[in-house]
Length: 103
Figure 1 (tube, one colour):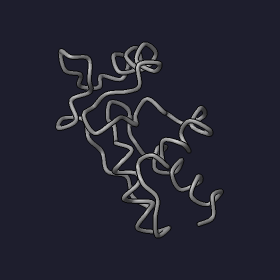
Figure 2 (tube, one colour):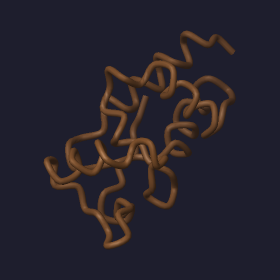
Figure 3 (tube, helix red, strand yellow):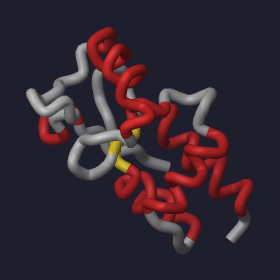
């Protein structure tokens, strides 16, 4: 698998997610994996950790709607600013906010 191509496709998926919506590491892995022939949520997480700064990284969450604790403060502010549905727990309401990217 070509790492640069995989990285570019992951970032393309993240850029598609509209304001107020989110996608998951797993959804991106499915979309990119269908084209690239592999990769999973952890690989998507690695791409985001290394290259996700310029894209709306806060719009990519875990399947339960949570983010790593190191991201929660800034992400929460962005969710409020964008009107992203958030549960009382602080997690994003996946049912209300989910967006499936395409390639």
